[in-house]
Length: 259
Image 1 (cartoon, rainbow, N blue to C red):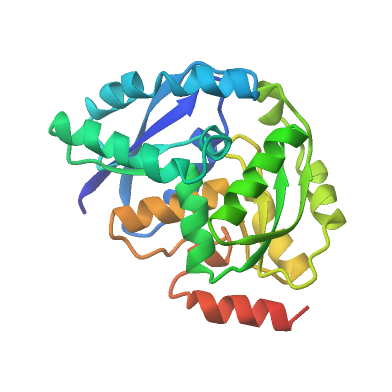
Image 2 (cartoon, rainbow, N blue to C red):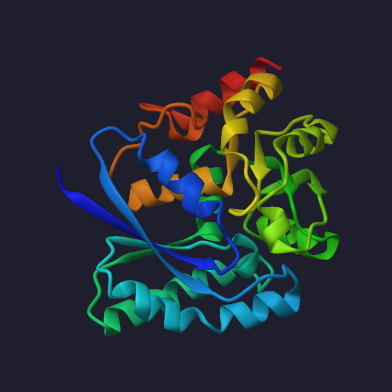
């Protein structure tokens, strides 16, 4: 069994992504994997805080490439979705160029791109979201997703700006926000549009309750990493997206017809 290394570029105050991603991917049968992080300083989820964080990207890419990862995840969704339209395409391309210049064979993914990849895999046209962000940032995320071709039917912003506090949001609060959403005609629910807001333990419960495919920034990131490693997803207990042998379109249709 070949050993695979995953590099993570994360905000300095993030802790959840380094908990949930390993938990997800270590459930994948036949995968020997380790995780290695580099950090960008950020404690406040605000436009100024995100802009100051993003300028640290090149340093982090150099640092994490030294660990010899097979794939690197730029693990902050709002950092890119709060930027220009299509920002994840631009940033992933810039990082790929930087890695190639340094003779690193690592593949690059981002949380923003992974979410769009997951929605495409599930044939999602209409989605609902729960975000921890302040309302203006949440609106930017909604606009970004819609520019990528997916309609956001409804969303909730929990308006938590302190990134340490985002990592402590209770599951009951996340589920309460999800229950407020109008899910009429929705193809999937994004229970946490943020790798720092915990939700992995809620995914299976939410799928059963809402009768929809339920994903998060973390499960989408895991899905994209597995694709980058050319490993078919076979992860139990983390939602339809990561189930073994899933026909994504059929899953989406089956859940919708059960509502």
